[in-house]
Each structure stands twice: as C-alpha cells, then as structure tokens.
Amino acid sequence: MKKLSITSMCAVLLFAIAFLASAPVAAQVYELRTYTTNEGKLPNLHARFRDHTVGLFDKHGMESIGYWVPVDEPAASNTLIYVLRHESRDAAKASWRAFATDPAWQKVAKESELDGRILAKFPESVYMEAADFSPALGAGSTDGGVFELRTYKVGEGKLGNLDARFRDHTIAIFDRFNMKSMAYWHPVDEPDSKDTLIYILHHESREAAAKAWQAFIADEEWGTVFAESRKDGPLLREAPGSVFLVGTDYSSIR
Image 1 (tube, rainbow, N blue to C red):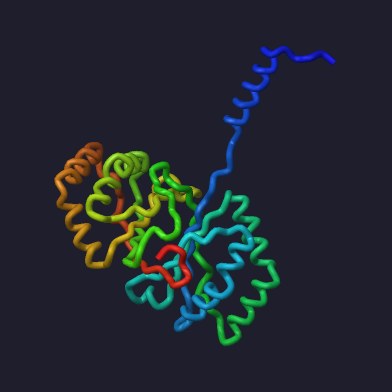
Image 2: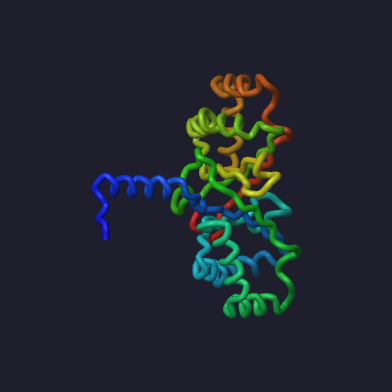
C-alpha cells in the first residue's frame, strides 16, 4: 500500500478541516410558550409544572430557561409564559414526541384534570434563535424585580437596521439606566423571522422600569441614535408590545 507523503497528508487534513468548517451545524433553538388556563386553574397548572412537568422536560432533553406570569390582570390570573432551550429544531420535535408519549406524563395529565380541564386553549409556541448580540441567558442572574417581555415588528427590510441599532447603541444605553438585557431573539419561522425581534429586560421594580424608560427616551444619545436610524423612514411599523412578568417559584430565573 502506497504511503502518503507529508505534503499529501497535510493537504488531506486541510481539506477535512475546510469541509467540517463549511458543514451546516444545527443551531440551538429557544421556544417561547404561552399557556392560558380556564378560570381558577392557574394554581393547578403551577402545581403540575412544579411537581412534574419541569422534571419531565429535563428527562427528555428540554432545558427550562425561565417560567413567568404576567403582572397585570386579567393575564395575571390565567397565563403562564416560559422559555425552553433545545439543541435543534429536530431535537425539539423528538423531545416533544417522547414527552407526549411518556407514561409518566400521561398519568400526570390525566390525574391533574380529574376536576376539569386546566388549559382554555391550545398552547402558543414560537421557536426562536438568539440574535448575535444577545447575552447568554442563564440562571441566577437576577434577584427579584420584574421582567419585561417586548416584541418589535419592523417594516419590510428593516430588521437588519433594528438589529444594528440594538447591537451598536440601544443595549449600552439600557445598561446605563439599569435596564438589564436578558436575551434577544428572532423567530425561526416566516413571516416573523423577517420582521420580528423579541427580547426580555429585567428591572428592579415596576416603578424603576417606568423611571428608566422615561430617562431612556429623554437621553440625548438615544435621541441622536433614534433620529439617525430613521433617516430612511421609521423602523417599526407598530408600537412595541410589552408585558411585565414575575418569575414563578419553580423558575431558575426569577
């Protein structure tokens, strides 16, 4: 058998490195889920998550990032919002299939609804990828306070401009006013993947959030950035969505 020369071996190695570098890598995805319960059933849903669901998610490779409830009524009485992390979209599909068919889950689901259905409608789910300017979202990064889930919808072709404004300016100004950036995401699926930014801020309190936003809007640097970013027209096509949240007792982020 003919031996390869050192030069040939190096060429083969370089080719292999180039091939691996160019091969597609399945990106981690986050899943934002919203559950709406029937009247009076939110405590039942919390009990099911606290005692069973979170553990079963972990068993099936679904990493729990955070669990929150809205601050304001009526959603405060009937809504749970949470984020999972999956190794890939395919992994998420496999994990959900395994979860749904797990005898332990089937037993829990049946027993938890002996006195009536917990959910008023099918859960809402948005798959997302972290923006390149998003900080790592992990546990133990806050101490009380409130979270703010914000959703921005841009005009056609403006998402890159919005990302640049956050990457180059907005986040730093948020930091200055103690508005802690937790995570920034883009939905995976069209049409939202082309026009939507979803992010979470942390504030020391609801009152602190109001003061921080007031100071942010009045900030001279922000005024300049905002004006310059709109030279070719407004970036947002509608007012931002904002929901204030608090962490549940079983959330790793609260």
